[in-house]
Image (tube, helix red, strand yellow):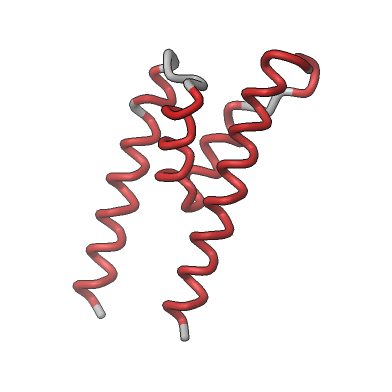
Length: 91
């Protein structure tokens, strides 16, 4: 039961991450007053949307010149993988 809820959560946070990233790319070109703060993008990554956020950023070429994202998000992914491995080993 927990696994189903966790997978549903990861799917939901990934969809939100994708949507926010695409919106910010659109806002960067058209609505410069209503940009998504970088902290929000990183927070969504830390909350579980890191893989979706990284793939989306690479596909739409958004924030790919920012080291904070191109180094930070892969570090978040590695940290999440380490935590997942630790949890699996402890169970």
